[in-house]
Image (tube, rainbow, N blue to C red):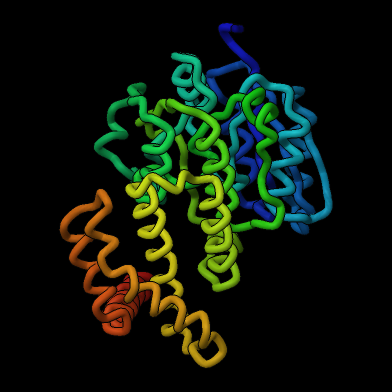
Length: 338
């Protein structure tokens, strides 16, 4: 195996003109030199495509693909088909990475015969997620594949594809691509497909990825259409999971519960119960039926008590959560106007 294998970094781009230059520069400035940077302009209507094209002229490592707007899953698949690296990584068009982002992942995945490697921490709004583990720069643990899947459902490892590295041959051999019917939760579905086809997975703890809060991103705004697509993604994931792993089954239920409770809060907050009667009833009954799920998952006591309260009184907990949201938003508005 080449000591410095070629790594293909795929960047889907759609209407991120304010961010994309910084995104591409952060990849160009990697300490790891063996890079192929694949920019996929997914029909942007702003200057994103122009910025990507101008940067492709000054760096021959950049491959620019321009296509009609078909969604992030189509864009990433186009990047995979165009890639020639031994390994594949993904960066979103409005985020940016530290200079040792690629080299750290390559070091981890090359430490054994692994098909992919993951990370359990990142920056969000410049604050580290899972910051205690994140201080262990360069260190990693090794888990079996079902433990990693469980950690994803329990929100210990973020579900995205940008905190992971994949062996290209592994994706090709197993014909793993993004489901083009799914535009929200597509990364999670992709990862579950990958994890069910491998055995042991290294998990790093270095803070290397900056997840940017882009208020204009349709994918990062809460809306019912996206959430319903995300729920559809979870049910498609269940097809790939072992049916006899009860621990994993409870983790999936826990994750679904969290998503549906969020939907319940949204429908109530936006006064949309009348036009979403069946969905509201489904979310409500799911919370009631799975009241004991928190007892069987690896979460803290405080969260177990909170979720059992949700099961006992979904309406009451929705009211409390929405009230807290209003208080927080009011305080944020007060500070911004001060």
